[in-house]
Amino acid sequence: MIAVAGSTGYIGGLLCKRLRQEGKDVRALARSPEHAGDLSAIGCDVRQADVLDPASLRAALEGVDVAYYLVHSMGRGSDGDFAKRDHEGAENFAAAAAEAGVRRIVYLGGLGEGSEHLASRHATATALREGSVPVAYFRAAAVIGAGSESFRTVFYLVRRLPVMVTPRWVTTPTQPIAVEDAVGYLADASDLELGVDRELQIGGPDVTTYGGMIDELARAQKRRPPLRITVPVLTPALSSLWIGLITPVDAGVARPLVEGLSTETVVTDPSGMEIFPERRGTPLEDALRRAAENLAVRL
Image 1 (cartoon, helix red, strand yellow):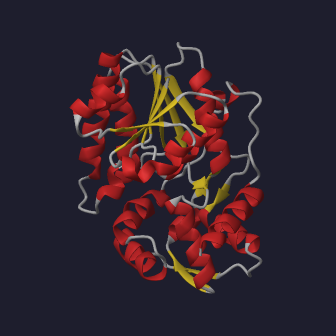
Image 2: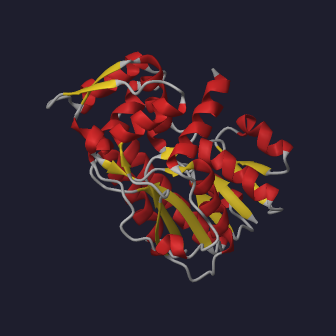
């Protein structure tokens, strides 16, 4: 039995569907089970569970072999306490998993630690690993997919602005990964040897910059890359407000994302990907085009 905490999120939902396609037994954990009708329809065992409610976790993890932790509290509000909630939720989950006899936890965090958002993701992994259950800790840069907040931000900026005033983070190197590849790595982790208890950095085959990704995404939409005017001072607060005006992404969510853009997010240890020799990365051009097409259909 495989449990997925955060099953109604973008990555969690795709992972549940991928595991069910592979014939796996999946228990979809959700704070609001009524939002998981699509997962119930494909045969997932939907259970109510909240990582901030230890009692609900104990029942939800009973009989589970592998438990995915794909919860992020940043979406629960923009009051700035998401790091505290993340840490508390991870501690609760690790303790409940140990009590239930779970044999492995799989967690997806981010590359880099140069912002509150990225530091919180790493601290979440640390809290999970302080428990007694082995943790496969995947770390990825931006995930390229129609439901990714970071991708949606860039998509709408490109779509709506022929000219952009940008901060220096547009020159920061990054190694984004297609959502299909990220989900594939996570799904494969359910079959790893039980002794795997380590960090696994994952990324696509192409290293670019955020400015390069903006240009490539414009070309994927058959648009001229926007003219970028880089200014020396453009704070995360101002950047997030600007993003909130131009895109549908909430400014409270955008700010911690923007703060992390000044941090280099490139795979420095590819040994984690080498554990999965049959997995091949999707070229950035293809990943961006596919994500842009999928998002455009939703408009």
